[in-house]
Length: 265
Image (tube, rainbow, N blue to C red; front, side, top):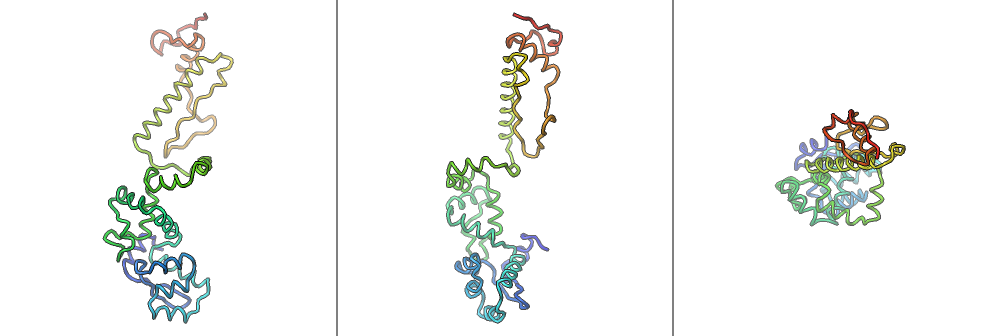
């Protein structure tokens, strides 16, 4: 079976042959469909779609078949396979284009190599061949700070965003070099905070002081339970000395710490 992008490339701007019952129906390319015809198919109004989108000859053949609902669903699935388009994706994008057209147009121009949203409705989908399938790929690849994704987040409201934030993440998006540096900085601050807390905690209560989990980086598997990284012996000696000496650092280098006796006030 061809992938969606391969099927779309093979179909090009030509009609596709769709199997309906035992008859082949020639379906025009999507850019030739009237707006109401596409809306009819999205609403499962197959008869209306056929009347609006098929030629008179093909519509007569459609009526001669007298297709059932299952026959229509099978024909739509065959059309999706032959054309590379997907009705669920088109329905999702129709809502986005209708509600955030300006933001999406700006994002396509800024993030997607100057893609023009207007090409979606032009003959042959314009110079850039911006089909609904391709628009879905580009839209899904927009970063979180894009105008469209930001507008969608703002439309959710604080309560909904807080609810979504509680859900477990399904993977991690790509990180920039700056993101990595910020994660390193946060881990360094957390490690320093841990050392200071441990140094200022009585020895009998030091086990209750736990280090913060490192910021999870994309592509790294977080270790569970006792598999986490432990402090080097020299670092533990340093912490023990500081705890016994009210946070004071020992003279010399870290390598000298094991030889330094703890002095009591």
